[in-house]
Image 1 (cartoon, one colour):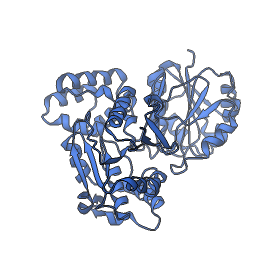
Image 2 (tube, chains in turn cyan, red):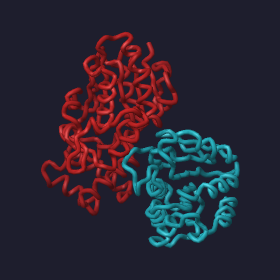
Image 3 (cartoon, helix red, strand yellow):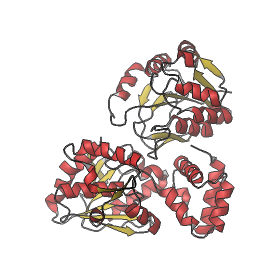
Image 4 (spheres, chains in turn green, brown):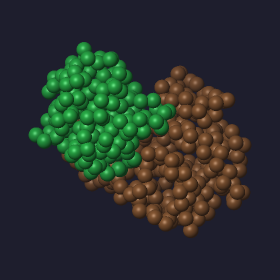
Length: 185
Length: 273
């Protein structure tokens, strides 16, 4: 099955991996990338710019109802949930945090899974809570491809261990292997 | 989390429309699904069918349902930099040309923006000079706004925001703590008029100089968002200020020539002539 969208979730300890992933995502990537990272709600500026400087692809924090374009990276804005409304549009939400998190990886992954079904590719990285567990399960249940960072390779393993306990992902990979996988997209 | 699929959501939309004449298709689909899933979880409804059965069989359940579906939970003083701009720039500007202006907060679904504005006006000593009016779509929502307490967790977020807005003060004095929950102060509730009003009919008159419509459009589909904003602009006087949510966009609303940008960063606009 051809991948139609890449969703990446991470929290504490994931920044270094994200930076490496953004470096290898090439300008030829023909699918959209949705990046859902836990971050401080009161810091609205700086994070987007930092990541955008690393990436050769255009990286933005989307506005509500922003059109989805292939080859772009959409970073979930601080203090908003980011949902995939349909294959053409992003929706934001200020509903209550899930697992103390807004943006919630579960919500982002699950909404992508419902829209892209077998075309979704989800990667869950290091983190310190259980957000992402149900999201990975939803992607898997709807036929998408799931990759979880090897807990032994995580700075903080809680998030990936929790996901693996609920769902058997398609692959459990180290940082190096995840980067290699993504570089071939 | 989503426990209801897109097809099941569309089925619920159809049933609610046919049986109760309420059009949920005006809402953004993904967030509606999220709300439906949360509502089912809160009411121990294991399947969409069990939700439909209760809607059809239990008198009064539709009101609870609509309240649950519409109610969002923004924190008070969410985006504190916006509230600072309202206090320091927007309010002084609307007072330049009108002695007793009105601030309107339409389609309220929870009371946090209204109460934040009431606190702001009180602290600015303008509570008797500026009329604060809000609208909501039914009595259940009005009751929630007036009587529902803030849980401790949400109050902490509100308090954190408020400390950015006004570092020298405390939000505690505007609440009554009872059984671990924060109730709004009745004296403050008297500061604003909260009217039940059909969603499609904004009540804007010549005294309305500021419309606070934050984070409402993210719950509506594109066409409905566009229609709501256009209706409000149609009824407003030139110069009336419109504030939308910080991550909402006017780009898809096709408003070229109808609004002037005051702050693109904070999404503050005014109606053009």
